Length: 183
Image (cartoon, rainbow, N blue to C red; front, side, top):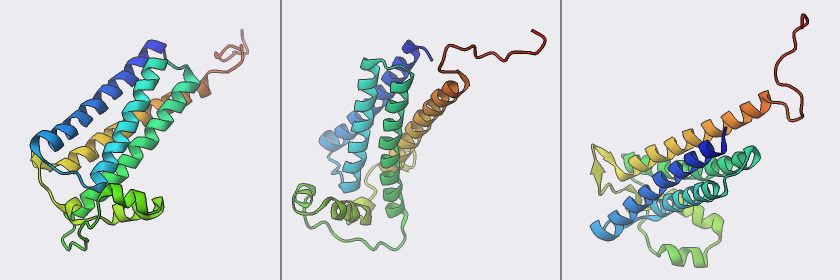
């Protein structure tokens, strides 16, 4: 994979993530939708994914660095996929067993240990199960899930491609062509 090719892919992934973040901020501040805890976790994962892709695009790493950047991008996008999937499950649950939000996210993070915060986020709250915005019949959370799945697929494809090419090409100076007995 050439340097220009990897830089352009990282930059395109950054642009996609930045556009999605821009849409989420527009829906929060211009339209007035309040994000729940799972929405904020998805936004954090999206911001981390975008930051990793921007740093990689600016850095222009070689094969080893690209593997590291794509692996980090896979981790960020998988975490966002899990959060979005959990919220979709909460929205489609016919029997809601959710609690009302008693404290703000900032107070929860300041007073509780991280494991408790994550557990409370994934247990969900009433705000997490409400569908307040749709486009073409899909909720905002379902669109978020589709975006994260696409990010996972892109990052995994590039990661596996780099590993496969590295496996086929020897690291030493030997030729990668098979030697025939008749040569």
